[in-house]
Image (cartoon, rainbow, N blue to C red; front, side):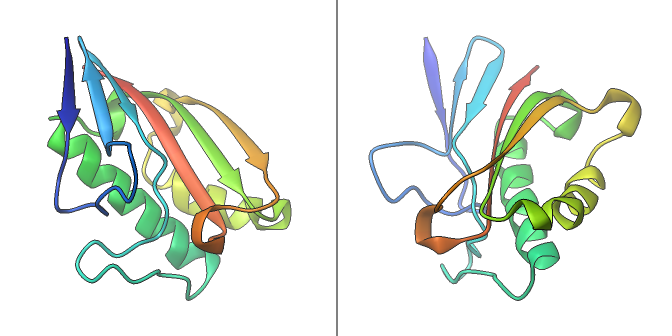
Length: 126
């Protein structure tokens, strides 16, 4: 019933979870942070570059499921500092058509894995 989605073009899971799970025609992704999948290094130069890496990781997961950002209908963004919202939103928004952008919530949290500044998860449908 469920199909595990994995790509080497996104960071490998480091625990008991998968990059994404496809159930029927719905894809549920795990949260992505700014890890460069080629070398495992965190990409934390600035919040825009960090967010771009997160989105590129998510793009790779979507592509592994034969989807694009056009298939995304719901996202969740976790950020460590709400003052970074506008910069994160600018990068995030460049991956979507504003007229068909997904529903979303953005939540400030106390701490994220590896002390990153942003983590994003998505739900997409074929």
